[in-house]
Image 1 (cartoon, helix red, strand yellow):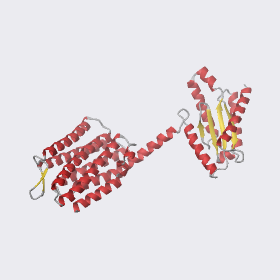
Image 2 (cartoon, one colour; image 1 turned 90 degrees about the vertical axis):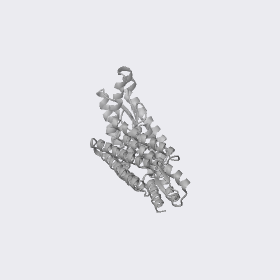
Image 3 (cartoon, one colour; image 1 turned 60 degrees about the vertical axis):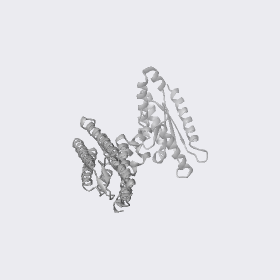
Image 4 (cartoon, helix red, strand yellow; image 1 turned 135 degrees about the vertical axis):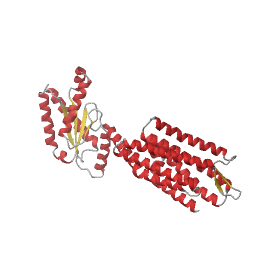
Amino acid sequence: MYYSSFGVLALVLHFIINADFIRKEVSKQYSLSRNIYGNFLNALAVYYVTDILWGILYENRLIVLTYVDTTCYFIAMALSVLLWTRFVVSFTKNTDRFGKILMISGLTIFILQLLCLIINPFIPVVFGFSETKEYMPGETRYISLILQMVLFIFTSIYTLVVASKSTGRHKAQNQTIGVSGLIMSVFILLQSLFPLLPFYAIGCLLATSIVHSFVTMDLISENNQEMEKTKMMALRDGLTGIRNKTAYLDVLKDLEMRVDDGRLKEYGVVVFDLNGLKAINDNFGHDTGDEYIKKASTLICKIYKHSPVFRIGGDEFVAILENDDYLNRESLKALFDQTIDGNRKANDVVVSSGMAIYDPDADRNYNDVFKRADKNMYERKEFLKSLE
């Protein structure tokens, strides 16, 4: 039971440490190399289980079951080596000749291990049991372990060479993976010398713990940053860079919730609409029209710089006023109208705007405030047209 007790401990720690990469719903978010590493961890979990069962079955001299479990043990070990090799090559993102040789070598060792295990029931080349039910390692067992050890050493050298050409976080990650491979190769050597001790399990636990501490946590952090960046891009207007209609609808949900629960008691809405965009598109082309939209966006954001501004249509923008901009709403509106009056005379960008303030006694929801602001905007638009 001593042998199996270490395997149980290793298996429990394995799942605790590597939970994020083992769970399928999480690994789907990661790149190919990270998914391969997840498969490697799953293979190790199978190996730990076979190692645990081996100790129990062998101690009770259940030889037939021990034989089956030992076969699975060697398959899981060879599979973990194959997946580690694939992970290293994929992680380094190098497709050179040496990387391909490592991939082929890992697959070759795995296939040779399977062939030897197929032959083993007839000729015990990998392992067997004596008449007194004692475990007897075969010659090919040592050959297989040596080949696996050599492969780990070469993958480590390969990764360390890549690390020497890398910088920053990627350099540290590659160095960690290289050192982890060397640790595993050392413990494979010890396993070959002491077949009745769980050295391979110890090596795997140490190596994956190091990789988790210095690599996978970085990868998870990078993944979260990428997801956050993607989310932010989805909420930004591609032309102007300000928040888009999706972000606008999200903010409205939060605004309505804060009004309903009493956290927000006052706010204002300013609706903007560009004058003459259709004529610019028709006469000068959409590229010129896009520049006109961007100039209008810059102008709005410059004056309402403390408020969220959204582009909710082709030529329509909205600003939601809270805090200082709400308190200074009249002066900001006057400044905006004054700027537009100057632009109109200088034949520059012209934007109509209308403002409305939330009235808790009259407004049922945000839409009521928006409609009043929109109405005021159209009145301003008609006034500006009358000056042409």
